[in-house]
Image 1 (cartoon, protein in one colour):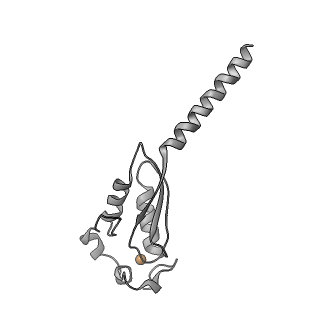
Image 2 (cartoon, protein in one colour):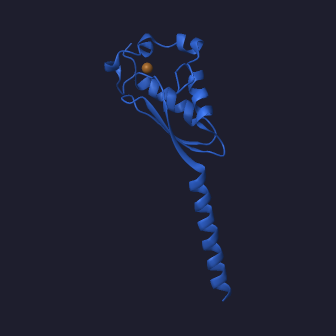
Image 3 (cartoon, helix red, strand yellow):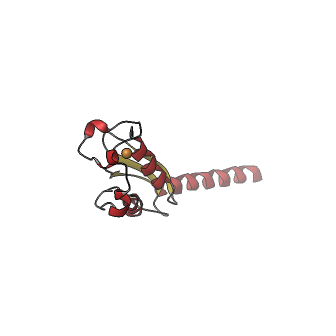
Length: 123
Ligand SMILES: [Cu+2]
């Protein structure tokens, strides 16, 4: 009898824990105007460095930064701000101009869609 109570209690804890985890986990997309693989590394590294961000993947073709994060610890605005700070437009937040000025030229060329690749800038 005691054992059954213990098993049920453990199960309840597990169910509650699973429930809260899924509630806190949120996925969101942010448009980030990166160009190449080097941009990708920077964008993803910046997003992942934020407390509460579990995964961050930037797609060079769609230019979407897909983030999975704990909404109790962070939010889309905070992630966008961090990415804008290193020199990229992120959603509605404009890139930090000083940071962007230090980019290699190819990373500034936003209209050259063919430059998008998994490689860094060739120069
Ligand atoms: Cu780049």
